[in-house]
Amino acid sequence: MLPANLSLTCLPSLLTVAGVVGSALIIFAYFANQQGWLHAENWRYSLANLVGAVLILASLITAWNLPAAIMEGFWALISIYGLLKHGGWLRR
Image (cartoon, rainbow, N blue to C red; front, side, top):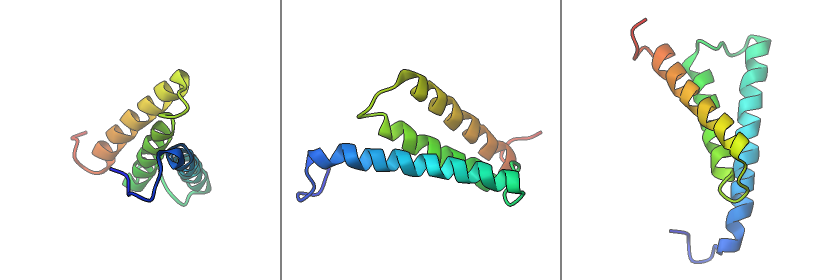
């Protein structure tokens, strides 16, 4: 439930901001990986990608785009796999 002082007209703007933040998070994680600051085997890399994908998926609620939803859905699933694998919850 939204707070009383937050109208539903603000919701698309908030979801757009969430999508932009999600995009920035994924881009930063990729850049950090390329710089050698954050390795793909580090669980934080998968977490950043998962959170970013979920935020982008949330933004698609008000601006639906099937190809983007498919891409981000798989991005999230692969990130969950990475968390399980690199977080030590899956046997190799």
